[in-house]
Length: 259
Ligand SMILES: Cc1cc2nc3c(=O)[nH]c(=O)nc-3n(C[C@H](O)[C@H](O)[C@H](O)COP(=O)(O)OP(=O)(O)OC[C@H]3O[C@@H](n4cnc5c(N)ncnc54)[C@H](O)[C@@H]3O)c2cc1C
Ligand code: FES
Image 1 (cartoon, rainbow, N blue to C red):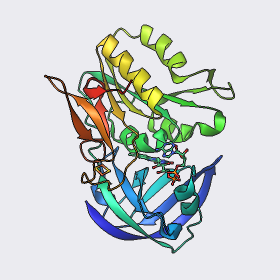
Image 2 (image 1 turned 135 degrees about the vertical axis):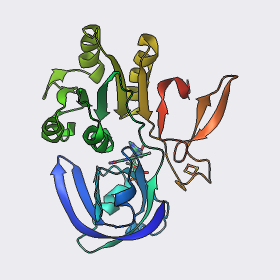
Image 3 (image 1 turned 30 degrees about the vertical axis):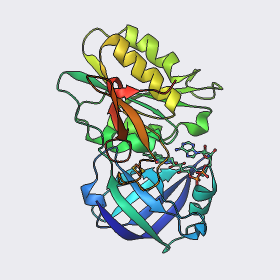
């Protein structure tokens, strides 16, 4: 993990409200594991000095890219960054997704920026399986061609039916699961919390693994402040775990969801 001043190489509109920020940083790119994130300080924020976490969408030896959607003051201010702006980054942070087991069929499940968090995993997995992407409308279904080009069988679902099956990701996943009788699926999931819970519940009920990237608010990002804690099951009960350092990826059986 390093702290780096990165220079904006390019900042482009991607799809709908989503944008891609390309940053020159030689200290972070080469060390990134799929599912890790950076903690970015938005420079123009004035009174709001907390960093914001972003999954690393793409990385190479010279740069990283972040795929994000402006949702509040921090990300709106981030959207004004221009070529050659400098941003302060800490990363790569978090544990990242584990390797898939040898005998499973990898399955990706993503909603919103989840596609960004899963792209490097999709690229690194040797066996390509099925990718279930969910969103409100077609604009929220990101990077379909890129995942298909990697060899993934992409199944989109949208709430309004503007792309793929009308409904939730589970409306595509459940019938698919009923047809599986060879390899056990192994899920790599990133998306809104209800999606994480729904996929985690299915993994437990059907006895396969689901690696969930939890989306918790973060302050320090490095394990010091306990802003991001969740309840992690243990053999005797539960303990606090820090999403930024012990996660953000947890296996479904580890997570004790708040009621
Ligand atoms: C590990 C991790 C990786 C992430 N990766 C990405 C990424 O690759 N791309 C991306 O666009 N976003 C990502 N996020 C979410 C991103 O960090 C938030 O959108 C951002 O911090 C919001 O900051 P803000 O100041 O703009 O919004 P705030 O002013 O803090 O919040 C404004 C509104 O946005 C909502 N909001 C805040 N945080 C989130 C969130 N985490 N998810 C959904 N809504 C939120 C709030 O509820 C509020 O309604 C990630 C979050 C985590 C924990
Ligand atoms: S954000 Fe500070 S411990 Fe995780």
